[in-house]
Image (cartoon, rainbow, N blue to C red; front, side, top):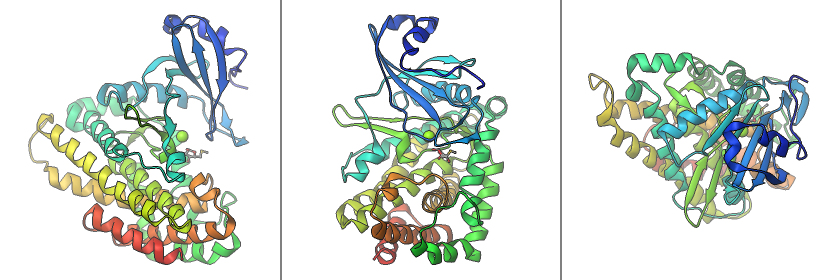
Length: 391
Ligand code: SR1
Ligand code: MG
């Protein structure tokens, strides 16, 4: 073991040793609530309020034979501080980084819930999609050449490398679903669907282009894993927080937009096979809402860019849109072929799961090969394809 792991019994003593957490006082109650793939997560209640401790395991939680660097925890802490600066109120506050024990202490958001679960239940949290678009725009502007200028961007980029976690994405999102791989989990009734999708020369060319773009374009300090399970929502009062930024790196802004779009596709596929046509239509409409939040916020920030010469706003937005469509497809397809499914799909009875997976792959193909235009008509077409293929 590379570092000592926390337990519910050791968290109170740990908090007491951290000067940055002194204001919380004595911890009276601790719960372990981690349900993701990678980390321990503790909610601690203390005299001075609640806080959350997130500790990186040195291996994949759901596959302990798979080592992963715990240094990602420090990377997450540093990215979260930057995101708090450029997008305050849209991410959890951060109180402490412990690079020796690989622990960050962050804001307790236990009065929020994970958006994916709410979507799975057919709930509508209005305004969340727009707020997430605004979050992506604030990060896209504030951490890029637009907000930082050329030298500031290069310095920030040099400080934010995250090669191990980028490699996970390169493998799990852009490679393994398109080859024969032990991580892939394909139902017998979906074998032909997966073979048709992953073997399609147009799909392979588009995914190859998306992969090289992901690996080589350093626009902004993006979230890097912005699926609906990385979003906390609360109704009263309205609040939205993007969390879990351990995959943050200098990458393409369209990757974050596309991650949201791809997860709306997964949520809509679930709704459709369950007979929830109205919920599916609402979920797919969130793609345009996210885009609107993004484009409006980015346009509002645009007059403050560091260098107003040459670069044109509309051209840049068009490029982000095109990138987002490719990444939406890649992010949706990986969840129905490769490692790490999502509850939208995994909790469906097998017969419905087969139909949902078929539908998602058809939608992914559309997004990869015919996405030109605007988000609203595009996601109307996505809805039609989902409905036809998922019948
Ligand atoms: C081995 S990590 C598997 C997945 O979990 C995270 O949420 C990322 O999406 C990653 O691809
Ligand atoms: Mg995560």
